[in-house]
Amino acid sequence: MSDLFAPSGATSSPALHDSSFDGSPFDAIPTFADVEPGENQRWTTWPAVTPSERGPQPWPDWVVTSAGALDTELGVLKTGKEADVFLLERAVPGDPSQRVLLAAKRYRDSDHSSFHRSGVYTEGRSTRNTRDTRALAKKSAHGREVAALQWSFAEFDALCRMWDAGAPVPYPVQVSGTELLMEFLGDESGVAAPRLAAVRSDRAELAELYRQVVDLMRLFAAAGFAHGDLSAYNLLVHEGRVRVIDLPQIVDVIANPQGLDLLHRDCVNICDWFTRRRVECDAEEVFAEMLAASCA
Ligand SMILES: Nc1ncnc2c1ncn2[C@@H]1O[C@H](COP(=O)(O)OP(=O)(O)OP(=O)(O)O)[C@@H](O)[C@H]1O
Ligand SMILES: [Mg+2]
Image (cartoon, rainbow, N blue to C red; front, top):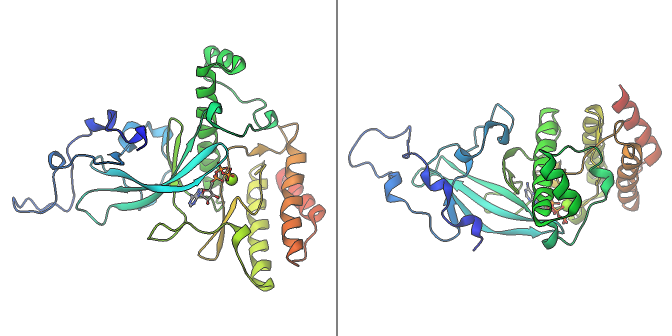
C-alpha cells in the first residue's frame, strides 16, 4: 500500500454534507462518522490544496469537491521512467452521483527515477527560494525532492495553460506535492485509452488522426509553446479523438534558446510516424506552419 494512502492530514475533513439529504433520520446515506478509510484509501485531498493548486474554473461538473469523498487507489496504469500513473476513484460513499475516476501521476525523486530530462527544458525555471536553488544545485536529498515537486507543478501548470487555450489535454484536477490528479482518459471500467502507437486503423482513419494532431500542435504553437516530447506514445486516442498527455517539459518556442529545435523535433517525430503508415505529410511544411502560428 502506498504511504500516500495512510490516513493522514486529510482526516480532519468537516462533516459530510449531502445536498440530497432530506432530513429523514432513516436516510441510508452514511455520515462522515460512519466512514473510515480502508486499505488503499484516504480522505480526498481536494480540501487540503490551495485554490491555485486546483484546476481552471469553471470546474467540470464531474469534479468531486465534497470533503466527504474518499480516494481509492484501484491500481497502476503505468510505471514510467520518472513517474508512475495510478488509477484512482474519488467518490462520496453512498452517493453514486459523486464518483469519478482520475489518473494520478506521481513523480519520483531522482534517486528513484531512471530518467533525467535534459537541462534544456528547465532553463530559466524559477525556484521558490534560495534554499531550494542551492539544494537543487547540490543535488542534496532536499534538492531531489524539490526537483520532483518542480516537475509535478510544471506539468500541472502546462495542463492548465493548454486547457485554457482549448487544447485537447486531460483536465487537470489538482496538484498536491509530487502528485498530479487529472481527468482519466478511458472507460467506466478503468481501461485507459490506447496510445496512438497502439492504434490499428486504416489509412483514412489515420489521416483523420493526423489532422487532429496537427490541430493540437497548432493550438500549442498559437499559445507560444511546443510540446517538446511529442510522439505516438504521448498521444492517446479516446473516443475517436486524439488527446495529448505528458506535458511537464513544454517549451516556450521563442523564449527558450532550444525552442525552435524542439518544435522541429516534434514535427519530425510526428511526420515520421505517420509517413511510415502511408499518411502523406511533410515535417518541414508542418514546422513552417507552427512557426507562423507561434509568431502570429
Ligand atoms: N490522463 C490519463 N488517462 C489515462 N491514462 C493515462 C493518463 N495519463 C497517463 N496515462 C497512462 O500512463 C502512461 C504514462 O503517462 P505519461 O506519459 O504522462 O508518464 P511518463 O512518466 O512520461 O511515462 P513514460 O516514461 O512512459 O513516457 C501513458 O502512456 C498512459 O498509458
Ligand atoms: Mg510519456
